[in-house]
Image (cartoon, rainbow, N blue to C red):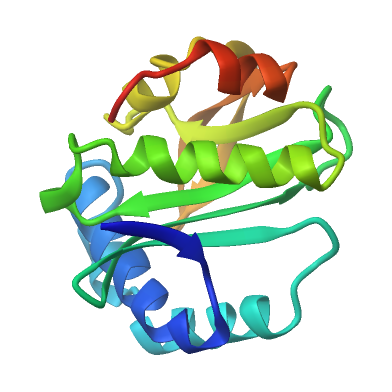
Length: 178
């Protein structure tokens, strides 16, 4: 298994993982109709745009096993401008069969290294409170910064912003796994 920077040609693999992992992770949490209506074609368009025209300081990494993308993580500038963080982990998704093998940890750390190299010093991630993967983030000992409600498919869900105020310390002090 390798972790590498994503390229434009990876858009289809990322879109496939994005949709499959949403369906796996959020089953029983988010409405089944919403999950059923997720479209790899729509995600493909989004990922082609992201990968062909990256924002300054943004980075996307993929986890690849035998030529197949099995996970990805996307990072960049904090989007709201309202939080006490200069960067954000936008998304990190793995296919279920690869969870628990440190793939998520490797993606997260690779992204944190890229953020640091791009001049960022702190990072935040938004996680649905009902998402069992929140335990993955909690294993890195973040600060719970704030909560908000988010609309997904016409239903409101609570999400928490987890914050690490020093990316250098995050990288130095954490060797937790997913």
